Length: 55
Image (cartoon, rainbow, N blue to C red; front, side, top):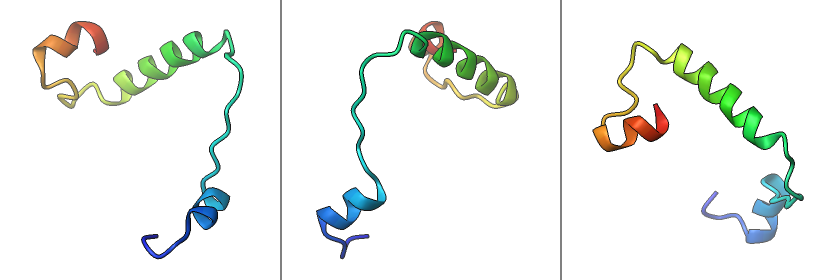
């Protein structure tokens, strides 16, 4: 990838800007719960200060 031009990278990994979707908040909450369920045996929040916000 280091040898690729920006144009080549943009073709492989395009950046698409879209308007805000009101469903984003609920999609995030659903995905967060799925991931927390899958990863419940792992300490994914090693910093106590983040636990109340993320985990």
